[in-house]
Length: 131
Image 1 (cartoon, rainbow, N blue to C red):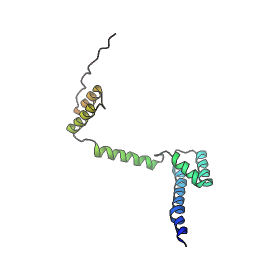
Image 2: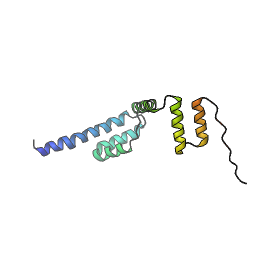
Image 3: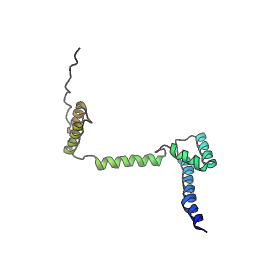
Image 4: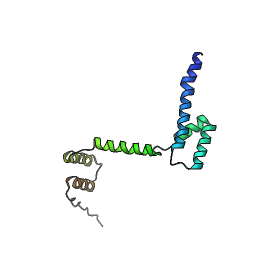
């Protein structure tokens, strides 16, 4: 075999074959695609291997299988557990920082502060609107 043959085999054909196989298997694993839509995607991917597969992978929404949804949920829970403050002082510091930066309004800040401290929210000051 010549170098150009090996180049086309290892860098072009095998990766394309793997992506094509992933698209076909993903179409059958998904639970959000109906029977006719699944059949149309399979026909598109088989008849137009490069274009059909590329279009399918671009249009495909993330998190459409049970395993993907479970993995996304678990990753979200791990993120919250790792990066959320675990004591009241740290939570209050984060709230004050968000309030100072303008991400929380005064009523939102008072409500969240009351939630963290376990108290009742302070009444928000009313502004009078001239008539």
